Image (cartoon, rainbow, N blue to C red; front, side, top):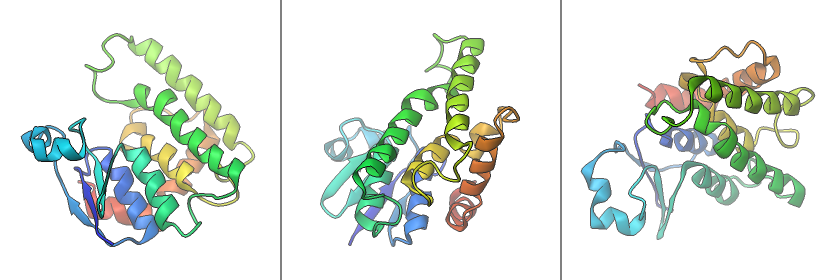
Length: 198
């Protein structure tokens, strides 16, 4: 097995570094920033036509997009621990991952140029709606899907990273706050932040 992860820990690659710690995988990490000119070179664009990070190289297979990478790693290297194999649970894992990318991530990004068409009050309203959805889902659950931590939790919590949620008051959402503490209190999450976060 030859796994290579390309991407700076200050990018969405941090989600993948956490997942690799969860799975105890041996891999090579190449810390490349999002604006490195190498990403626009022909060699890299052949692997990832978007020229973005992160990128996972799994032997002869290249995969971009952090949440897709986590789903791939959990499904193929998790031994059934993090990617739930029962059909309905597997569908919920996908649902939460896609939901987080479309309903949460746009409103917690720090890149104001991406959000220039959205007022800060509208942005906060949309984020509050998303957090309310997550709060309802977690009111009577420890984890998002099933009885154990899964890649669904990692993907959604990865979007609500500590550096992002530090900018918001989560007091109105105690179930979300407790769930995030459980996610980021996991030994693998702690190890990943200690090793890679700067």
